[in-house]
Image 1 (cartoon, rainbow, N blue to C red):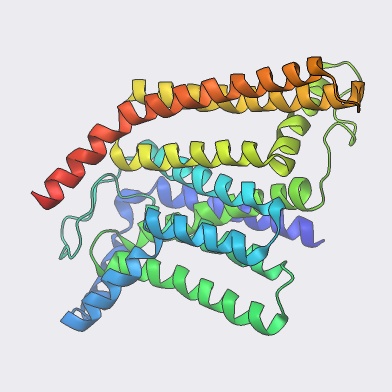
Image 2 (cartoon, rainbow, N blue to C red):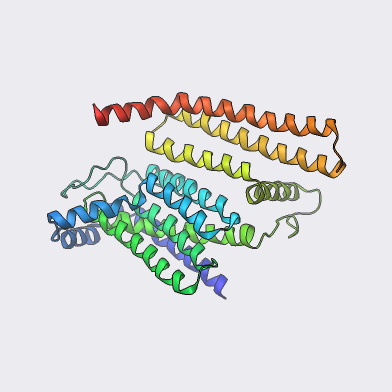
Amino acid sequence: MAGRLKWLAAAGMLAAFFLLAFHLDSLAWLDAPVYAAVSRLHRGSMTRFWHVATQAVHPAVLAALSVGLIWLLHDRRYTAPILMNLGLSVLLNLGLKSLFARPRPADVVRLVEATGYSFPSGHAMAAMTFYGFAIYLVSRSALPRRARRPLCALLGALIAMVCVSRVYLGAHYASDVLGGLLASGAYLIVFTSFVTTYFQDEHSLARAGVGKSGSLFSSFAHAFDGVITGLRAERNMIIHFGAMVAVIVFGVILHISTVEWVVCLTLCALVMALELVNTAVETAVDLCTEAYDPRAKVAKDTAAGAVLVAAVGAAIVGCVIFLPKLLEIVRAEFL
């Protein structure tokens, strides 16, 4: 019953999101009174507080908190999902903003610099997806109950503060924030269900009998299990995956071109694919012999070397693409 209610909630959130999305031009009845109420609070000390609150989803803050969350949980299974959540949430928001292309509020006092499209709010989505997923992880962790409850309450308060800050600072309409919460809430239900099934309970699509033996669906199920196994068990695979998430986040921040996106994502996929092949070679060699054999060493070393060559090449290309953009930002900031 609980599982059914969860999926009904996700469907309801999606329906409400698209109801908002397709009536963006007729939401003044919601946006105007909310902004009027919030704008009455405009004063120096309050504005400084909301400027700080809105930075709770700054990429540097989320990166630092991700490392802290991984350390706090002491559970290697959740390292890949934490990184995966960051990348997927950024791509989801970018895609939705491009789809609906709503301009930023024009008839408000803008207290913060904001670029790009307005609907749905990227800050609201980032807060909900990151801190909401953190609540999910903390609630299932081995931390004492007396620590879990206040920590979950603090994470929930951060979500609320980020959402309020975007309207207060004039960066978003209230409907942008609501749309961001609805979209990310539905996403979070799907993503946490995926994590529970494949990272916490370690289910397998192939063992679950997806597709008849030898069928196309069965081959996809085995391939999916291979990728998930690599993310669960291989440290280097998690490192490569974390690098890909960093590329996605900085690609969005630095507005890289379509060609640069294609190059970066192709290289990331190549490195991760070679890491999976390296794992397969090592496992196959270990199955064949437990004794030291120079030929086994050659097989393992050359497979690892292929990953290294691809990773170094990807890093060089990344520097060529990202360093000039980063230097330009630094030059504009300090000169």
